[in-house]
Length: 175
Ligand SMILES: *[C@@H]1O[C@H](CO)[C@@H](O)[C@H](O)[C@H]1NC(C)=O
Ligand SMILES: *[C@@H]1O[C@H](CO)[C@@H](O)[C@H](O)[C@H]1NC(C)=O
Image: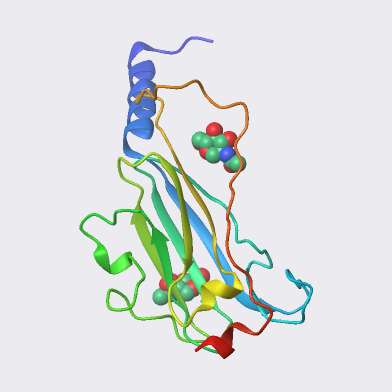
């Protein structure tokens, strides 16, 4: 099959822009309580995201834009913070009390932030009302773009380790 020179340069330009500018990652999260998980063997509410505890991995590459549409199905306000993500020029996406308003119960809101120039492992968690003691947290990976060299070989495999205390009681008794 013959492809003209112009066509090839268009394709190459397309590849260049795709790798240089990052992509948009769209996520939809349904946050709810589940009392059947019993992480410590007791009946207590656990905050799940799309039914998962811990929450789903956000697997991004530097310069990507992450859009997280959060549906709050809890019976109280909910605010997520993206711990360690720098939020350059958009501090209102940081998700701690005073930078954004919490998402009211029964409503949704979309966080949009860029994982700019930061390679590494991070995590997110709900930042108000001690909800992080009941779950709602999960891992964030920010991978390097191919054009950015890292001083180690590509790992054979990767897994995310989240460590925390777990209480026997309902997280709401703590506040
Ligand atoms: C995460 O993204 C990187 C870069 O696109 C990819 O190589 C890797 O397979 C992804 N990992 C998972 C668990 O999706
Ligand atoms: C709420 O979710 C709907 C449906 O996905 C979406 O169109 C809308 O933009 C979201 N609202 C906010 C404030 O993010």
